[in-house]
Structure formats: structure tokens, C-alpha cells
Length: 354
Image (cartoon, rainbow, N blue to C red):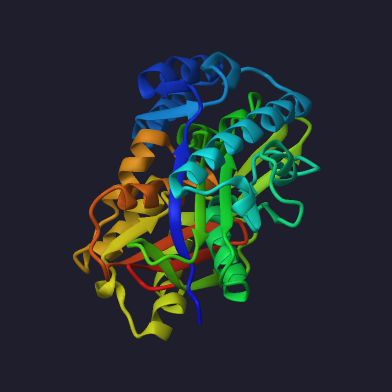
């Protein structure tokens, strides 16, 4: 049975850079009419989020302004398509492919709405072939990138000689809710940044990560823990404080879904591509991995440099591994957790034959 391999992986960040030092005055101005304890806690959340910098498609002044749903979605429709086109062209160039070489185009995003979807617009912008298959993947949240890899692998098992482009594009900064002073809104504002990534997958004999196995694990009765509510001012974050502990309790079981069929344990994994959902989630997973002599340092570095990029984050993390020397035979575990509550995991092996 053929296995899919990542031929190229590109990432792109929007032009507005926001270091933490620049964000803090805006967050302070936003909560200036709240009581002093609330203001102090808000500042502490931003400073302790372990996000030193993030990027946005608009200025900080614009991010922290009042915007209607129409205004936010207009920004999404413009910038999400532009970022997707840029990162797709970069990935095609890196893979030495033309747009007409793509047989299936998958786009995952959860921070806006378009119909026709982003993939349909890209087919026309890049002049892709009329027979290209389209798969828009919405509402998957932070697991979207991992889920996209799973769907790409499934497609390539059916069509092993085809080539797939997977795009993840998210603009969480424009989902900010100006008049919502819930802790879910404060935490999400402190964590998230904008960005896009594109992976090209297909048959190859070069040294690169091949998808050996993938799995999904659904947490029972947890749909209330994470997601978005659609309001007249856009997407309002749902982020239950029980989320980190719930993930910790289920961690062993959800990893077993991926590794047990291969006869592997965490000790057999060389590289961990773990979505940094937040400081507590990453800390809890880091403690488990530390017991096996492993770390989530690369996930921490992406969180620090870019913030939580929702579905795109795992591809940003994976690119850092692909840009450094990796030995043939090394294994990687890629994990994203999103609304549902669902964990999507992918077992990678460098140098595996297609």
C-alpha cells in the first residue's frame, strides 16, 4: 500500500508584526474601564501566554476596534485568499511543480466564511486544471492542519500517483470581540495570531516525512469545551477552563490510538509536532513527554514567535523540523486538538518509501 510523503512545506505570515510590548498598551486601553483586579489579571494573562510576537492582516489599532460581522468577514475573504495564494505558489515552487500538477486541493480554515470557498477561488487564480478535486475543510479549529494531512493521506491511498496541495489559513486576530470581557475572549486574544501554510504531498523517493499512520480520537461528551459561537459581531470564542485537564486525562488513550497498532511507544518517537493550544495544555503534554526524555521545545518556539495560528500551527512546527537535519528512519508524532473535542494524530517517518 502506498504511503503519502510531504514533498514541500511553505509558510507565510501577514505583514503587520505585533511584539508583546506593542500589544500590551492596546490590551490595557481595551480593559481600562473594568475594575483594577480585572485589568491586572488581563495584563498577567497577556504576559504569561508565552507569546512574544504575533502577526495580523490588519494593524493593532484595527484589531482592537469595534467591527461588525460583515466588516470582519470582508477582511477574511480578502486576506485569507491572498495568503493562501501566496503560500500555495511558494510550495509549488519549492516542489518544482505547476498548478496544473495538483490533482486535489484541500483548504482548512475556521476563522471566516466564504461560498464559493477559498479553494474554488484559487483554482481560477492559478489556472488549475478543470478536473482538480476540491475539499474545503471548515469548523475543525486547531486540529484542522492535522485533519487535512489525514484527508490528504486517505486520498493518496486511493490515488497513489496523484499530488495533493493542503492549505491551512487562519485569521484569528480579526475575530476579537471588543465588548466581550469573558476570560475566553481575553485568553484567545492573548494567544492567537494570523498565518497560512501549504504542504504538497505525493509519491517521492527523496528523504522527507511520509505519513505512516493516522488516527482520530473523540473525547466523549466534550462538545461544550471548545469552539466558536457566531454572533452579530463575528465569531465568539468558547474556551472552557476544564480543557487542559481533560486533554491530560485522555492523553495516553488518544496517543495509543495512533501508536499501538504499530507496536510503538512514546520512547520510539524522535520528534514531536504538538499543537500549542495554550500554555497549560503544552505544559501538561510536556510533562508527559519529559518522563520519556522528550520535549515540546519546537512547539514552544513557534508559540513564542507566532502565537497560536489555529489549524496552521502544526505545519509551522513541522516546517522547523523539515528545515533542520533529520536522519532517515526518524519518526515524528504530529498532534492537533480541536472542537468536538477531537484529537487528530499523524505518525511520520523520514525516508520511508512511497
